[in-house]
Length: 158
Image (cartoon, rainbow, N blue to C red; front, top):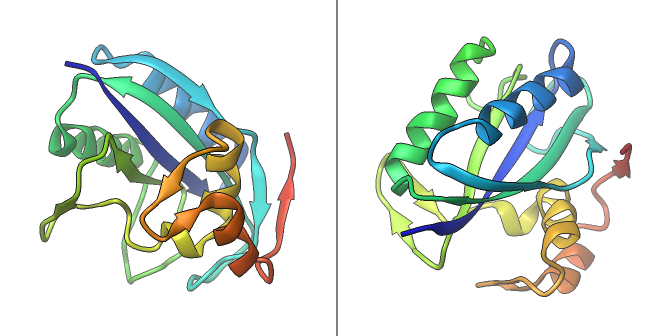
């Protein structure tokens, strides 16, 4: 059975734009991912993180991968791009977050879905809105949530 899922992508080290493009192509070519739609790219200042400006986007996929298998794929792609985790919220070559997986709620030590902080991040909400304007999160609609994030710098670049 196919499940509709959303994945957040971000990078702020190296050639971030190229890294995101390569990661998206890797997802697109993965055998158990059947469609992929990508939102525009955005520049954003780090939120609860350090380092240079991020480039962020969100992709929507249809997949037959179970949530943990999808997480493993995402972490494998991060590793292919040299992702290191020296400390929490460190700058990163690539960050892939499973934001939503169908309408499942998952809360394990390894995976929390819906992503617990996405409703507080303009760099997630705006690209989600680009893909699915009517999407409702537990905390509310995307327009209302974006109002709460209006102090976060976000600039569309593509």
